Length: 218
Image 1 (spheres, one colour):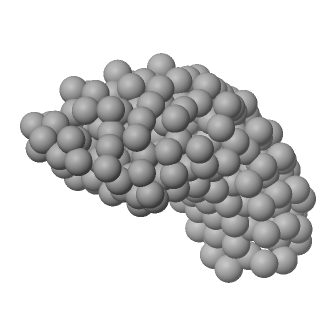
Image 2 (spheres, helix red, strand yellow; image 1 turned 180 degrees about the vertical axis):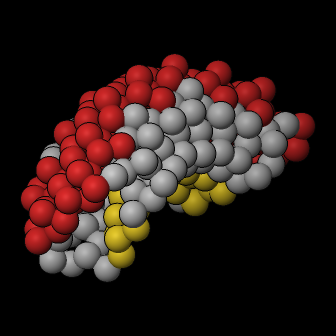
């Protein structure tokens, strides 16, 4: 937290910076206040990782407000930050206004069904999305429905990581039904989701649409 406060003074002189990685620094919500000041100067930023920084919902609100100043962010990594439904809602509001994202990493948070619904509605507007990691987020079949529906509008998606949630057979069916809209999908991870015979059968019936599939994890 204090470290990022000290280095923020140099970033106004780096407007051409495109890659910023501050993962694993325990910056917390208060550190996000300083990071948000930095982001307002980095209008050309394309990659931002704040993975594993105890950001929480309050910190994410600060970051998304600042990211509106960034013209074309392509990769956003927010995994391991104790983000819950309110944070996911604010992130969804940002994504709906800035549909330039190619990769979103949200693993190991706690967005739940409500958060997944907010993200799903926003991601439907991000037609450039290629990589979505939202594993281990307490997402059930209800939240999975909205995520899967959004994927019908993301034909460039190549990697989907939904493992360690609670989508069950019903959620697996929602995911399987969107395969026909995802001709480029190469990696699918649905591991440890309580998927039984019914869910596996529905996935198997729709695999014929994934002609470029390289990895399937159930």
